[in-house]
Amino acid sequence: MSEAPVREQEHELDTSWMDQMGEWGIKAKPGKRGLTLAEIQIGEYGELPETTDNMTGRPRGATPRPEAYRVGAYGVRNLSEIWLENATFLYEEALQRQWSSATDIPWHTIEPLPDDIEEAECLLCTFFNEVEFVAGDVPARWIAKTSPDFFEARHVLIAQVMDEARHMDVFRKRALANGGGLMRMSGATSGFIGSIDLARDFTEMSTRLHISGEGAVLTMFRMGELMGQNDAEKRMYRLCAQDEARHVAFGVMHLRFLCEHAPERRPEIECYLDEAEAQIMAGLQNPAGTQAETSEALAILLGGGKAHYDEGHKMLLVIRRRQLKEYMKRVQSAGFGERFENGRSSIPEQYAAAY
Amino acid sequence: MARFPSEAWFKEVQEVYNSDSSLHTGGGGACETTAAFKVGDECYRIVFEGHQCLEIRSASEAELASPETDFIIEMAPELWKAMVENIQEHGAAHDDQTLNSIDLRQDDSIAYSPEDDQARQDLFYRFNQNFQDFFDASSRVETTFD
Figure 1 (cartoon, rainbow over the protein chains, first blue to last red):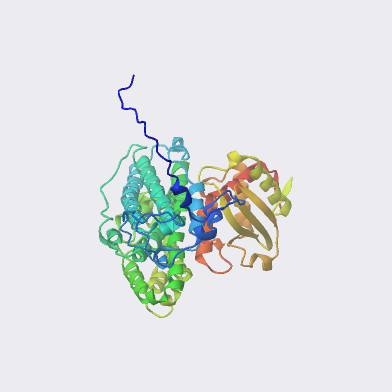
Figure 2 (tube, each protein chain N blue to C red):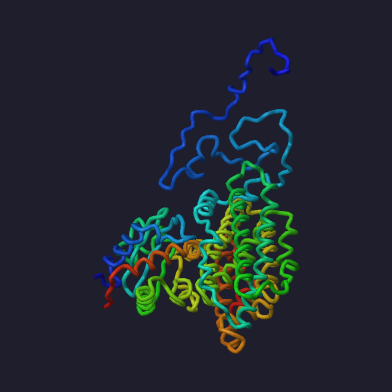
């Protein structure tokens, strides 16, 4: 028999919480693509504040609790600082297009390669491991800094962190799968790429990471199909490119939103682009540039070995032109295309010279 | 036996693609886009919705240029033919005959936005695996060429 004291006093059940509700009677209905985030942006739940003072982690649309602690030191509290029009779409796309590095890559197609080819591939895998750490770590820091009222944009960043974890693991797996291993680190996480993490403002970070950094890496991932020596490598790069293109889309669409809703910030954004163009899009900091170790590895892989370096380098230059052109068109799509016509940007000259 | 390129050929590919989910490979999940193919003078409009190719049909050039079209894949007829022949021979695009590989070997992208919007052209990269899976499904379609 329990020794716990028997409480004889009866208490009235307090159900006053039942009267504390957000907008009620909501009936979200699945659309053609299921019950997506877009389908639940209804009533007050779909109303986005231009500025929020929600510091308590209160879910958007829930009733405030006056005594709630200020659990979040949210620095991002203005819509224009982080929003993009297609956030719900990008999030659902990310969820529905996940893949597994364990089972979706035909690892059995990998066969022993000549040393120079294996070393070049392993150098790239080492490099991608380094930069994808940055691409995962940095958005992760901003997730916790963003008000939960803008959860759709946060969700896209959370999905990005998952994508980057997969990219890190797939390149690590490739490096360790064929008699090679990791090479000397590139140090790419210092300099401009490392400076992405120094951004004090989300848009500054996004401009550096999503548009400049990931835009450049997207081109490299796409090149994977040309330089891959087997179906495993080709598929690995192709699937990574899809993810990376989604991350780039976040940056472009966010910058477009900011440009339209906070035009007073245009001069500041131009400076971020100046900085990116002087570094990651130009010389040593560009992994597909003209001097970096990574570009040598790319040329060896594209050419089919050290003996065909020149041939590979020519292919690399063609692709680099494409990289520069696509960068310009993305910046134009985001609303900052004038810089390529008014002489502010040197990218048109680099593009013309990249033969 | 269907002739490439023709609406009948694309519709046969659509049927194969939609009827066998094993053709939707990892990374080729839900896809939402309206795109188009140009093979010489012939134009086709394709709509993907979720895991299905919802529509593929002949279209006019003017229709392709409408704001609905995210991007157009345009190649010389001989490039299209080489790609389809390669898929027929190997069961899926082999070596340098994937859409992405073909694209990277050209000076300019084979995919472009009729509105010259890179964000929409980038959908070719975001949904690349679906388009590859779609064309790889053509390995099961008996094909003749002009």
